[in-house]
Image 1 (tube, rainbow, N blue to C red):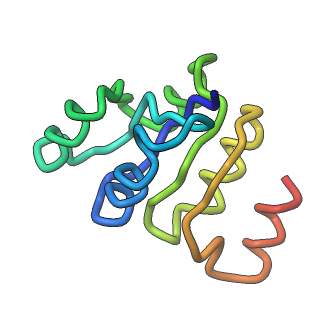
Image 2 (cartoon, rainbow, N blue to C red):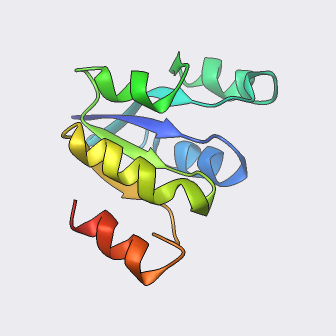
Length: 109
């Protein structure tokens, strides 16, 4: 079982979570990073997610094997590089990057 953290529980992040959680024997979301706790507390509690204060804290968690990024596009490059440097598998919701250079940096990490 792959233990995953999800970063971003807005509309699309919540959709990804509800599509996978409890329906896969290969992946389970166990943690989340979401600054809008008041708006997302119900989904966090319902899915028994550990709320992390930020991406760096999530990446330091040895229990996390993979990270799903459902965040603003402008943050993807930095988040992908941080997750890869921490040895985590990364799924990034499209677009991967806003420029060709940013995409190349992300995949060459």
